[in-house]
Image 1 (cartoon, helix red, strand yellow):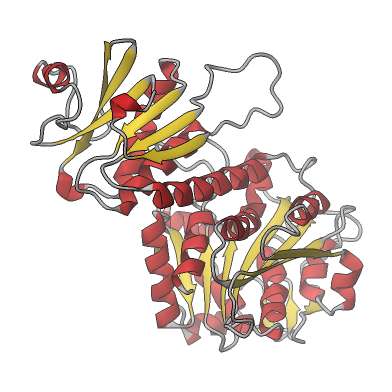
Image 2 (cartoon, rainbow, N blue to C red):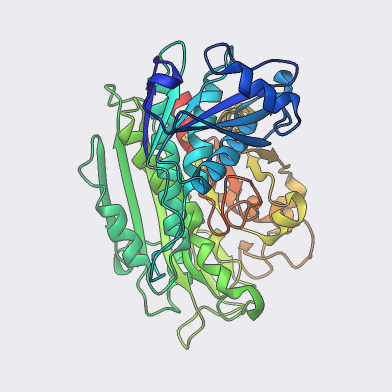
Length: 478
């Protein structure tokens, strides 16, 4: 979808469909056909109720009147929801060029929300379907405002496009998106402005001493890959570097500790954290963001075979920590453990890992918030602020030495699965905390928000959660 911004009036944009928002207690903007649109409101066909839409036709155009609700409650999320409702109606009408009149007296978050809500709602994953699709897509989105909002609109378009590409990666089946295929996809980004990409093979992972990561990979015939993305967008080559670390288990059967079959097909989504990291860094490059970022994506399958790691096995992580593997389905933390140590050794000043790590976080927070854990209050606040600004909410849960005691091993230094069936999301975070050391670090458990999220602008399947959050965080720290 092409996105542009203009200071021309909506009627002068050449749009075949014009979207007009109305706040409760306010009338139709004066630069639009106020009398007929006002009649829709007066007659009850239209309403200022949030996300309710009605249509009026005149002079070969359609006007979609959208309720925005109370102005005092208006924010970026409500803009995304309203934009999704308008896009759905515009698509039904066969719109090709859709113009939103940006509501008067609103902030930049409205511009971003209108673009994101439209583009995210327009997303379809139909790669494996033959024959004619549904209605033609809206090809162009125009934002008409009294002042120049071009920079905000283009930034939002870049981020929404990156999020949709992360959704593509998540929705691909595991036979298509192997660890090697994901690495090859990332390698295609090499050479973009400020961006260098390389991918280590499984033998290199083992030779480097990443025994925890390698233990997960050994059960599959598909070789693991460690994807490194280095983005140098700042002029100061000595500026602190941020590490973004993503779990990318391209299929997670649970290994020997096999998952129940009913929902195992959804385990192709276990690489969504890695997809978010790749696409966030691609977006930073497209935006020429003045930041230094290292992306690390641990890509592997977790499958049962005669070579698989077994419950009770003990392996050594990159930093020398011995780990007792009590459950092979607690594999993501093993991958991330070595990635965290690798980032520390490369001198990263701050770290964030993103992972579909535990079902327990979904029990706690559902599909509304991602779980946030951190060893540093200031860094946790920065991550939470970026999440709020991006419209991808997080909720901080505690770390505590008593939880850390729960991951101490019986036969090794630590265990990947506590013997006590409680605080599962927190003890998983405490496992990672061990490898973060004293570097400011945050862990985002996105298991509840990575797929099948009930938002009006998201379809079933991968959500692309984390792309906007990570890009916002990196830019906020520049």
